[in-house]
Length: 489
Image (tube, rainbow, N blue to C red; front, top):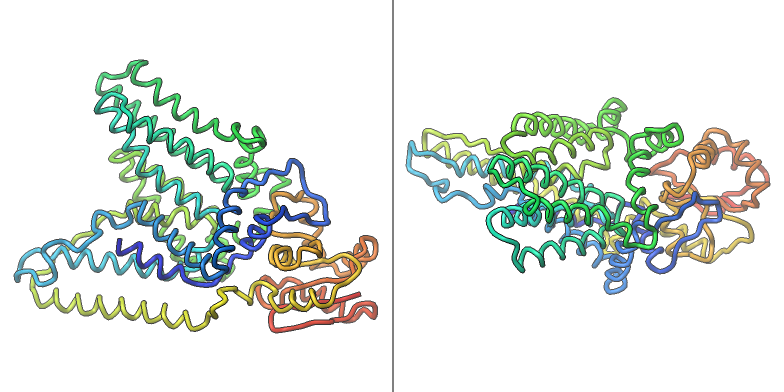
């Protein structure tokens, strides 16, 4: 529980992920961009949007931040992070001289975990992946328990009720995020291990196997119980294509969306060096540990291996890997020969822990009570745009699209963060505007664009285009603050 408490504390920061705003906008009404979308349209986040919209309606952004912080703590608690050493051993720091000081190992291992959580604290965002990890954490505990109980005794009411609840949860998960497929994959892995064990025990019979197989098949079939049916079932495969760039049409999304890039790529580019180095090292350690211990415990180490590979493929997947890593983290006990060294180590431990907490406390001073990351979304610019409406169409940076749709729904946006609803050609054309201002000028005339909003600090790729607009007599900069600029034609 100590790890979960630190996670809750570190997850208290403003809503830095800009996609949350179009999730909130969609909870109110489906957001429509004036540019075309790719069919079929599957709102795979519908239930996530309804939940966050409800929470936001109750208490605004501060309550939503508190809600996500608690959920992140629950996620790490469900995965049992630090469970094997979740409390200090009974032979505490003041152990007899010369005796084993296993508590020292516990304290120092927990310090390493706290340090890692602190470094990656800004990954604990309010995103649909949080719900996926929450549900996967439930599966992490419930499905192995269900299989174990079924192996030990006949099917009873508790097992049937547990299976029914998991199926209901899977049905709900299908409309929270495309990673719902992780649930059936995990259950299939558990089933395969169960069948191998039952074969060794001589219980490989249809009566024993069929209920388990049927349960897993029902998990895979849950998308078909929604109106989107086949399109919803195929959604995760399209998402994987966009993530890995497996096809030519998806390559631009894999290479041009920053969070889809590998931490190795980020490291080579000199971006977020500390985080990138730690990501690569932790992922390599996870791969090594999972391979070394795969035959000792197939399910957790198989999950560790898969999530480590996914995290190496794309930075955004690191939040999938981190709780699995901490849940399967091997203990590294060591002994200290003298009581005095135990006391010294414990003193250093507490000093370092309070130093990390001090850094976290200091970071809180940079936030305001609104809990809105005004550096990343156009808070003041959107207010100005509401007060100064325009006649034509709006062009906007993709990161600002969701917030604009939420606060000013009357002004249809050009693009938002739902890249999977856009074709590769459209996305590549949109990116070309940053490199070819003449292309933007031409399209602005033909498409009726008379207002454009650009970020100045974060995700700023528009310097060349803004320079060209300033040089064009038809365009004028009508608003500017530290983070955003607005041009009117």
